[in-house]
Length: 441
Image (cartoon, rainbow, N blue to C red):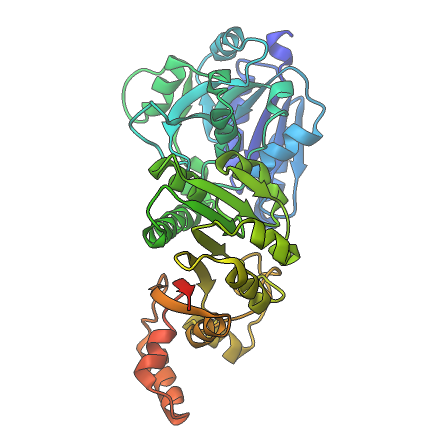
């Protein structure tokens, strides 16, 4: 393939000036076909479309919503007629001179996933300062990929580090060598202030500076919260070697963390999340991709040797949580336990939403489509008691404490008027979720 025929993909969001800089600098040196995948708001996308129209062989594809970087790339990879090498550039990249694409094309060998700026991250997508055991992460800011190879692996996702899923898949399959770093590109990207650059200028988060966090701050917060919850769950698990069975299969990183802490641990999982099944399978010794409600008494008897049952978003998603716990109780060993993560429907934020009628469903949380049952601290405890369990350990997970004095006073007054201890009710309204450990009575 001739250098000038390699297609170029870039994802745009609310920044016509960035696209102007990218296209003007690129067209000063290359004539390659360019496709801009745009998810800008109505007040921005017309300006970006006009910029694209000023340049030959630039295709503008607009979505009526913020498609985000990862899904935008994935849409292009899966829907455009692409063959052979494909160049991906961030919208805030500025080309200084010709030669970078020629060098990248020479380095990209048949069968490789891609070349570009590569650094090392952990399985959550965070940068680390070690290489042994770390995940090689190919930055989409500037990468040249073999599209046929890329399509064999998971697609980029809506994520602060959108290439995390494909890079994790390569890492876990022992194929990290399919990604190769380029020293001059790393130097260009890390040199953001002074000094000479080889070919490119890239002011990190240029889009973020112009149009907001682009979801990165939210992702960072959620990732930290998930990591903290995993650590809390691990503290309640029995010491190894142990047999763990997770119902819910929501977090493959928990399975991996347990096995890394004790390689002799066996980790099994059952859950109805087919989109996560391949990732979870690589972390687990066995995966049953099914709704836990469909598991019968015989299944639980067959796994009666389990040391701890982990219920991660299982009880609130179950059509019959009482029956699910009862089936575990029939087969659980006297010295085994159940560790459950359960959202708190009594959270003050939910109480306020109900008070004002704001009950719109959302993709996650208590109003997500998969949520079937709501529990408060009291009803959680009663659920386990009726199933034949005794709570031996519990902890509230407080992420959004109530800090508004007026609302706090109103909540105390309301509960006191109903004959309920206002301080206890106030504390019960603080937890976003509860972590519970129970043993058979």
